[in-house]
Length: 277
Image (cartoon, rainbow, N blue to C red; front, side):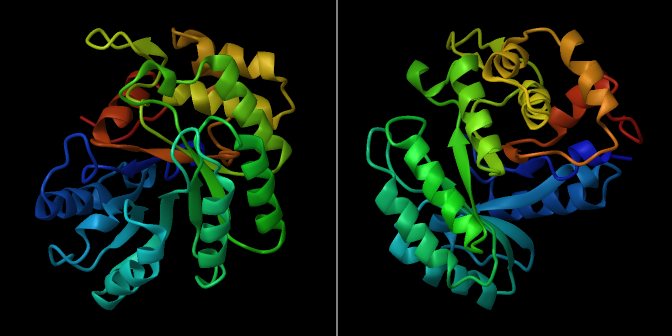
């Protein structure tokens, strides 16, 4: 019931800040998603590494969020596996904003060498050193490592929200290097909008999806930015509908605290239909 374009688009981020729910509730809800008609939309349950060892994590398939020092990641992964958890992928920050990301990328690449193809996502700040870090990741992928970039496109300060042109340039940079990417933060709705409480303008996940389709088809930064800047769904719905039966290029997905919210918006836009009530 979920078209291939949206397969696994939304990870379950209910355990992540700013409003994490309890582990037992998150696991139960994730299992519900996994048996629902829209299960094809839902990716992994994202588990913060800092919670591993604090509570007993039941057997499940999860994505590990590396909110601990990189040196602690190998032991954390082994703890999860020992408890019966299947780790589908790992996401870890490589630097703070303004820091050189290269040392962190190199550390994550060394870790990737020990993981037998387990997908790793290097969270690279959208600041100084970004393009060099993408070159390093591309070289590592060309050498056989399963590593790709991840970017934050929102946060608690205005400068953490890239402009449409800035994000378009990043998407095209990934396209040029044949790098799939994940996004985090700020993608609260399908289309670009301004939060009435904070005044911050958030990117829409449908904007990103359509912008990535344009980039994958050879679009230039200006064309990609135009799709990212759209604040009404009309120019986005038709491109999304016409590509619904094909694979999603480049854009691996994003996390949502409640995966039903993006599902609801896709249903309302007529892009997914099925047993949703």
